[in-house]
Image (cartoon, rainbow, N blue to C red):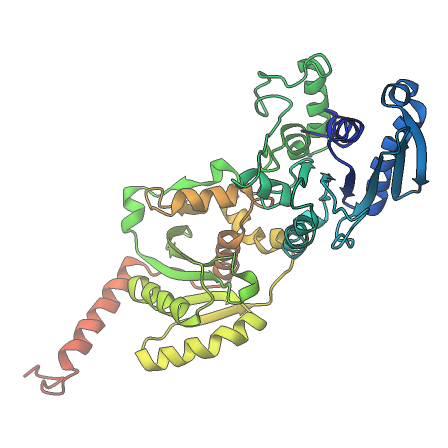
Length: 435
């Protein structure tokens, strides 16, 4: 659900109170993206118990045994008690115990925030904390988790649970899609006209994707995407045949830490009219440098690229010596161009974005890799994966500095000298007479 459709009221307050009042649950942990947020959720529960006389009378609540900012213990007239505590993301939850009982309900509400969710390391760290600290801390007999929030990223923890078969999930949208206002979620509260006015505010402030995220639970449903649909232009039959100089942008995933990432190699051919043709892509999920290098040489054999374009720094130091050694062993040589990595991936991809928007890039729409390639670019920067974006970003960066493609006359001359070399290379023919 989105921020205006009462998910916190329905789940974190009403559902939690229901479980506690009817004694279905006795030991509850409420988790927010920070401790202050969780304390606020706990305060709503405390206020409801303190200020709702009907609740106190019907369920015969005696009062608080403990009433703190981060902990409540409530006693009923018959002596039965329950406990609710508040925790922020990444706080210690392992080993929580009360009356020899582990928590039997964990309510996670808006665990992620807009800034942290854009950083892969922080997303992975938060996911690891939930899986290795929160889940094992539940009661093995009656433990349950309720996880609510707004999807901020396709690789967020919330999206991970929605896509996992291990979780029972439900995705809500205020209406069907950005331009389709059918299937209204709560028309009595939010009418179509009201939602259209809100959407217009997002549009007027240059943030239409913010509306998609907050009201449609779809951070990738962008109306102003980084890579636009109209910028993906197919190669025609003549463009498949036109002479090109080939380059390869490579994004390596070499460490165990990045095993979920792919090493991606994006092949582009630059023609004499200044058009870049994306003709091939290889994706490998492995940290085995031998497998990666073998795939690179497969590309070198297939496309005979002029230059490999890749990230400098640590990646360069890890892969460059291996590449150079293999070039000597195989007697196959290719230029290598490295660039200092820019942490901001949108800045890194700026060169290819501008080339695409000016109509300077073509794709092989019939290639088996194309649809997945386009999807990743279309959902950038909030998509789950960015490996393909990084590879084509390096390609775009390098192309801005590299040479023009040969003309047909250049290729004819090159072919002539290749035949000449092949003819006289065995040393038997005289270079003057040909005999």
